[in-house]
Image 1 (cartoon, rainbow, N blue to C red):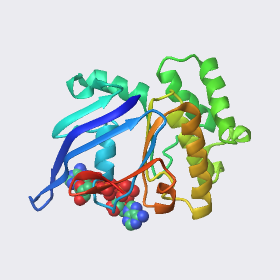
Image 2: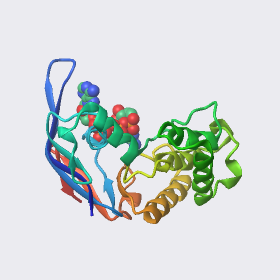
Image 3: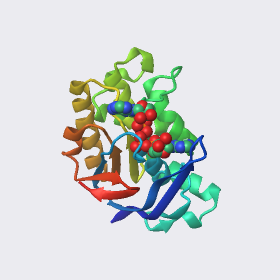
Image 4: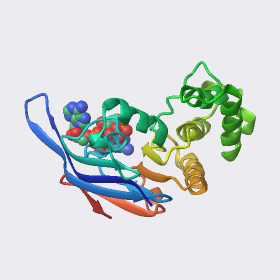
Length: 225
Ligand code: ADP
Ligand code: ADP
């Protein structure tokens, strides 16, 4: 059950000095439902670029991105945006929760933006928070929570619209090792429960080693580790 497929994805940037940098060079990737793929490579190797393209936030220079078998490169911008909102959840190094809203509200807003009623959104938000052990934090704002708690809420938000694919860029990069461990375990539990496909970029080799598959980026290509 293939969720994400990247075919011969290439992307180059032109640096300030006018030098062309080929960040991705015919990179291929396939991720199935229920599979957690770790992306481990040094800073500057192109992880964020790859994740942005896989998450339909950025376009490749060439190549194709399939989500659930649909070639998104053939879709209109509007259609791609809809696919991104419905099918893909994002988590970053920093939580990016809305500071003036409670945890529950942060999980309800994206659902209501996708057409869910307030009551349905609140029920799902409550259930998600409970699944990561934060049932008592629903009415707290992000600033009233610890870094690990904030990051667990960010995972819940990524899951709020029941995506098929989770994309995480250094999700534990800002946490101390113990907190990173707990947050990682929660993430794996969420992914396993929902049968999601996940691609997680990390500098943490220990965590990556516990994923289903590890890939690195070298010479603009994805290679098994
Ligand atoms: P990226 O995911 O592309 O590394 P981030 O937003 O996580 O970017 O980090 C911002 C900057 O900090 C980047 O230029 C990156 O090179 C650097 N950086 C991020 N994490 C680390 C790390 N663990 N060690 C060294 N440099 C890092
Ligand atoms: P990583 O996430 O592995 O740290 P990135 O994908 O962020 O790597 O960056 C890969 C390379 O592409 C780096 O050399 C970075 O400086 C360059 N780069 C990334 N985004 C841009 C951009 N918008 N414009 C120019 N260069 C970029």
